Amino acid sequence: MKISFIGAGSMAEAIIAGLLRKNICRGQDIFVTNREDREKLTELEDRFGVRHTYDMAALMQHSDIVVLAVKPKDAHSSFQKIKPYVTSDILFISVMAGISISYIEENLGESCAVARAMPNTSASVGKSATGISFNPHVSEYQQKLAAEVFSSIGMTAVVKENQLDGITALSGSGPAYIYYIVEAMERSAEEIGLEADTAKELILQTLAGAAEMLKTTGSEASALRKAVTSPGGTTEVGIQVLQKYKVHDAIVECIKAAAEKSKRLGRSQESKHTV
Image (cartoon, rainbow, N blue to C red; front, side, top):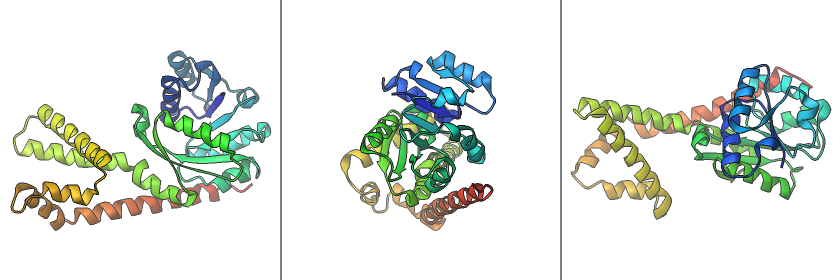
């Protein structure tokens, strides 16, 4: 399988690392390019044994998959560079936030096989939660190839495209929300007199344990929370404070706002260019 990456940022790097770690693809069968940062391309070649080029014809030739991994603002110019070399047997996978399948089709060709994926930054440690959707031109075989690519960096869920803005807000941005909570837990640990290193170990294990409980027990989060919350105990007092400050509502509104922002960003980028 030959995979070419248009864009050489952190997500492209994470996917390349995953593909090689899982032996899904050989370094010599991975091609990568970017707008102008040749130093970055050389670094990737040295680290992973991939090949880099600014020759779009060579990049696209015989590619089974082309991963569109540029910033959304650079989408249109990237499409113009590769459009002359588009063929019907290439699967295009976009990891650009907010850029719709229809916009990609308009720029590359209505009959192109296009997938739109939303991984998250945990891809760098093989723990991404990725949502992916396909247009009707993606064959079953190409869907399997796409699943194989993203299985190299974590788990994947096939969804409808109109759900991807929500997934961007929920799992795409989700790690940042967890880190924000950890920041608060670290501050509280300091204020109650715990050593920073010890507190961090305890927090990380607490998060890992809670995630594992949710994953393996099959219980709802609310049931697990109630099981920990003894009447009149310390957890109940803590939950009451969270309720007082409407933390539950704040998180819900946070994710809804991020989803709406994803929609607006996509519309904004697409409206700047007409085909």
